[in-house]
Length: 39
Image 1 (cartoon, rainbow, N blue to C red):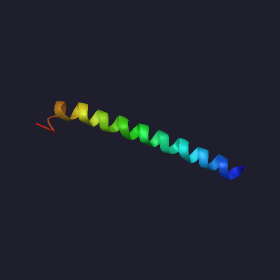
Image 2: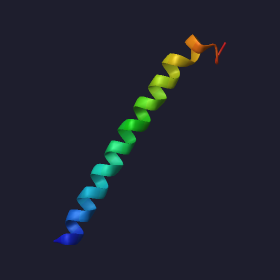
Image 3: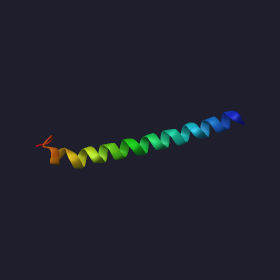
């Protein structure tokens, strides 16, 4: 039972990390041109 709980927790962490990475990439795409990094 403990192993299953740990695996579910790890899955939630992976999902959260993936969501944070997506937000970071989206923010970089939006802020890049504004900051002149892509120009």
